Image (tube, rainbow, N blue to C red; front, side, top):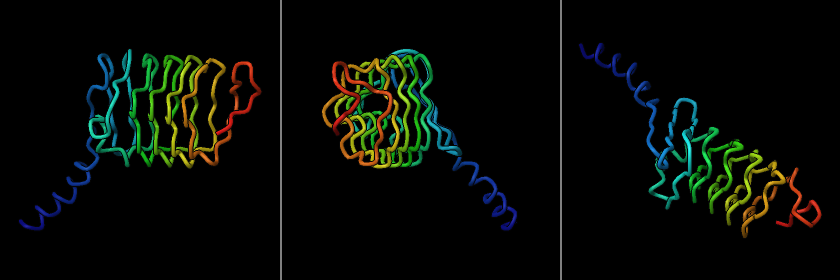
Length: 173
């Protein structure tokens, strides 16, 4: 009987460890985290909430998140939304997003590339601060405002596609 119970527990424990989690992250936005793939998906319409570190809805998964999918309909990325997601390697920001909040991706040292949608007009202060693994970012011409220290500590960064209005296509970090 003990062997049967032990065998059953060995089968069920890994299944419990891969449990999904979800919740809300704005008035009309929801999030879903699939632990087995490390994927966090934000869906719905409207503004994402702003956060302080320990009230981020997916805070307990911040080191397990590998990929963030932000679906069309989301119009902003909240303050500190993905801060310190150290395992995060990629994110694509859709055309529906118009702003990236302060410290939105701060400390995401595993992030290597990011694509920003054509509707983003502002990138908040320190939004990519400490993203030391970032080597590629595509910034569309729609961006008219980049906050203080937005890319501080992004030593490997190669900016492409951004031309600051009235200035050469170079951004000094």
